[in-house]
Image 1: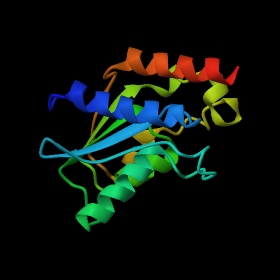
Image 2 (image 1 turned 45 degrees about the vertical axis):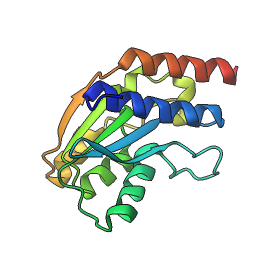
Image 3 (image 1 turned 180 degrees about the vertical axis):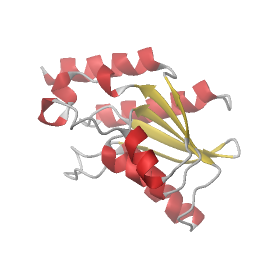
Length: 158
């Protein structure tokens, strides 16, 4: 796979598919530094019985352990879905430099949302502002591919 924005998002999508195949929600994440993947993960919240086992948080933890640092400045994170509040705070705390998002939270079907709705009006934007983070955000990378994964998940749940 090429070292491009779409190439890295395809890796995140492949991670999301791994999660989907294990009965989890289809969310995947990849962390890249200097054009190389340094961590990847998918949601294991359902299969691992752990509500904190989101793809972004799991990838950040892996990166911390491998790099032996808590400062991921210079790294980019690719997320198949818009990060939740917990993951957004973790991205800010980890000092990631860039965030690439495939699908917006409005693309997630209601049946995939906790309590069937997005909690309040707080998004990654507000979290980053509160932390004073200057994270560059790019949205819509391979959005349609991720929406298809969401639809596949919903069909499997029906």
